[in-house]
Amino acid sequence: DNQVSIVQDGGLAPIIALLRSSDHKIQAQAAGAIRNLATNVENKVRIAQEGAIQPLVSLLCFSNDDVDEQAAGALWNLAMNTDNRVKIVQAGALHPCITLLRSSERRVQEQALGCIRDLSVNPDNKVRV
Image (cartoon, rainbow, N blue to C red; front, side):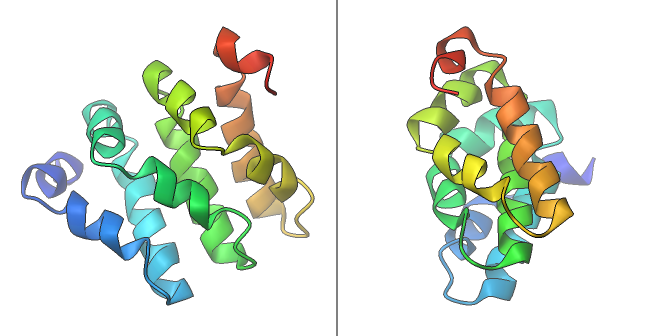
């Protein structure tokens, strides 16, 4: 499985570092790569452990639809892990995701809504939502 190989071969750290790029295209590609890697159950844990949640949250509401879509999508995939749900909310993702629901782009709204839906499954997060 390529998703597992990329993480095992050390690809995750440079991808996370690229989330902090000043280039919107690089940010969107890095967030998209994490979004894809986070479809793997084991990778969801590793991605959070290696510190991707906070930079992804920082990319939300970045005034670039591609970046917003990919970052919200990555967080949505990560939020399918119970432990990650709490970490994502603690990192401050709720307010930006709610703000993205007002985006003019349906694809951005869909990713933000999916993330909020999964975050609300955790009883500790329901009060915050």
